[in-house]
Amino acid sequence: MAKKIPLIRKTSITFFWVSLTLMLLSTLGLYYYLRILLQGEVEEELRSTEARIESSFLDNGNMYQLPPMVEIQKVTVMGKEILKDTVIYDPSQDEMEEFRELSTFSTLEGETYMITVRALVVESDSILMAVVISYLIIIFLVFVSLFYLNRSRNQKIWYPFFHNLRQMKQFSITSESNISLLDSEILEFSELKSEITLLTNKVRSDYRNLKQYTEDVSHEMQTPLAIIQAKIENVINSDFDLEEGQFEQLTSIQKDIQRLSQMTKRLTLLTKIENSQFGNVEPLDIAKLMEDTVLDFSEISSNAVVLDVSHAIVVPMDPYLANILCNNLVSNAIKYSEGENAILVKSGPREIAISNSGHQALKQPEQLYDRFYREADGAKATGLGLALVKRICDLYGFEVTYRYLEGRHVFTVDFGL
Image (cartoon, rainbow, N blue to C red; front, side):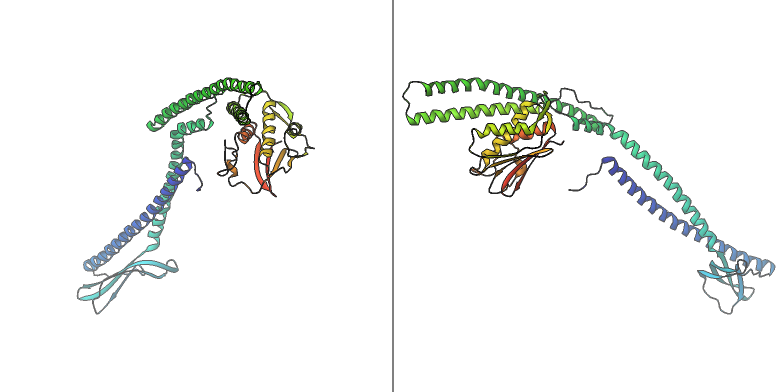
């Protein structure tokens, strides 16, 4: 997945590269334009000098020379005009200098002359570089000013959006406090704010209705289930002569009713955990609580449990939820253990690990904590036990992990001490 970039940084980077490219292109364009312009001016000056020399000779009969700027010599044959750059020795500077040179041929009073006039190129190059550097400095200052002005302006324009985004990240359907959103003069941001308000209100309303429905259904189901359970027990314990098949059917119905009753209680418990309705927090020794839980299960399970809880793990949590956590971890290990192999429970300085035997690792361990997750067709569903474990750990900031090690399924709860 590509790395995500904040909006302001992205727009600033785009502005930076576009502006830098335009600045470089405009500098190159200015350089070559001024170079052509200056060359044209130099050539115009050379031609003007050549014309003044001819005019002076016709008026006064004098042909003056000023090497290396002006040189005149008689020739026998007329040639073509020559315009070029050349490097010659300049006695005044005592060094080689670059000149722009114009050589023309003229017939004056019956004589043919080659008139050569030159102009220093160094001065035009210096002027050109001075102009280009000045332009670069000005453009750079304008670029920096616009860059920070654009960045600060974007931050101001986008502030309501970023503020509302932070509020959305902090939004919780279980909280009764209203979400604080900012309006904006930007039409789209204002419409977004209105839609977010409508959406959050709708979500909260639906959540409250669903929560109330779940609680009502769970509560209302308990009474008829208890009545059915009592009537079945009365039939089983009565003096009626029940056939073996009828007795088995009634016993099966009784177990299904118990399972349904437990399921509704666990669903209600999940809802209460997600609503943070357990505020009775006190320090508890989870290792000791796990030991007591194992002793209770040993009376009703044929699986041996090997205990190694020499480390005390004291954490602040609700006693009821602590019992649920330990009970579900142990019952899950017993339920899914292969045969009657031993269950291993071990405590460390900050974690408890419980393991049971298994033929192979789970294919999708990340879905273990989903409600009623089934690894494959025909396999046992996980029910709500591990989902409750995960919700309790999330509530208190614990971390529950699964791994398959040496033929055993290992669940570890790290209490972050």
